[in-house]
Length: 629
Image 1 (tube, helix red, strand yellow):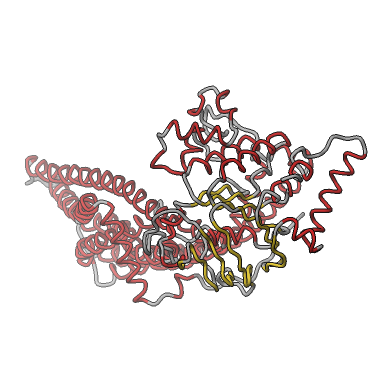
Image 2 (cartoon, helix red, strand yellow; image 1 turned 180 degrees about the vertical axis):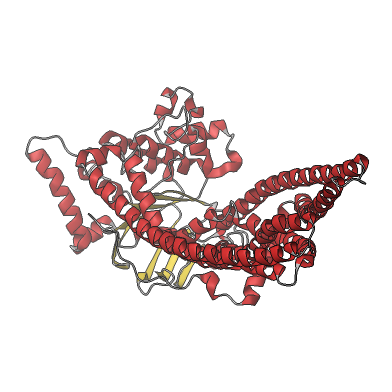
């Protein structure tokens, strides 16, 4: 059986490194989240909960009086009216308790809903403000996963437990005052009997937190493996290569690892829990013996004994609630630290800086380098080139050479670690990334396939023009996405299989829509990252012709492994290991006889071999199709 991969021993969770002052700060932040979510329901819940906490003592006392009156009634001298009046008071207390409980429950439910919305909104706002580099870090995903996991119950749990503490103090004080009359040692023994179970619960609650925190990464891996087995887009490949059993065995290996940890915790928690229950039973037995001795001496009434019997449960429940509330707040604050640590991640303000106005007429990279945070390897080093309006620049290189990273720098998704990027001769860092990005449009190699309507898939490039039907139609035509007209609802047809009624597209059709999205934005810089990767030969030819026709007086950047596309460029840059190794026109690079020439010749020989063997050319838009340009 395959075993889950071993990982280094877990470090101490962030929340457990915090000082008391830090925890108090997190408590204040948590209560602030709750209050801002709904002040009205927060206040209503607190008042009704604390108010109802005084009712147990009142019920015990009225019950004692009623039992004593019944005992005296057996000897005569007690009227039915006096018994009835005490019963009316007791019924009134029950009705009042039900009313307060109903109002508190409704307020808590409404508060929880408002709080879940508010915290989820903060998480989404934070995710929207994170830099793109952050999303390429697995730790960010772990923190996001942990933050989402705490949305539902943790903030509300802290607030309700804090209110519960106040209520427990009221209940303990009032019920304890009644039980203190039964003997000096009775109340302390009953309180002490509640402590062992709380200690055990708190200890293993913290262990559960540590286990869940440690399992976050592995749980994400397990969920990913499960998604591979249930993916509609991957089912063909999984079935064809027949690696379902491999995926399932890996998925089960993670489960068995989780199971071993769970079994260990449950066994130890059960053993300690039984010991705590045994000790509690002995302490309650001792307290009962003290009360029975006083009863045998005629020092207690029937009503007093009822206070003891009913008060045991009340005191134990209250003390357990009080201590569990303290430990529960501590544990919930550990989980809240997950949320706050995510919300404290550094963000990048895309609107910070001067507003860029007008077209981008020139882009210059001057000795630009880039290194991902917390790494020691430069992805790009000393990159220098210039491209101006009306020109097309092509990037060539093997996978991992740094081409896509360079595009992310160009489009201001990343910030350079060194060097400078100039736009129209001005330092790009002066301007807000958002305003510069409005002048740029791109199709990424891993372009988005949005499970929305065809119109939205195009119009998302500029949401302010989402209802610009002529503009969307024009972009669709430029991208050669005529298939849209054959869809049941035209541009309003929902796409993908995720939602009911959606129409799935082929890879090439999705790429056509991504191209339409690029054309829809009226940008002065167009970036094509493998724009024809999913297209057949005829579609590629049409796309290249459209690309050449619409580039016009714009700056065009091309990334492609197909030299039929690369040769469209006025200037070609060859990247290898993050460094520019060759640069020039197609003719200059062929004459140089370097890496570009070797790659070109290798690809061209493939086409020649196909034709020499009597097979159709592999790519009608290939090398020969653009040789005369």
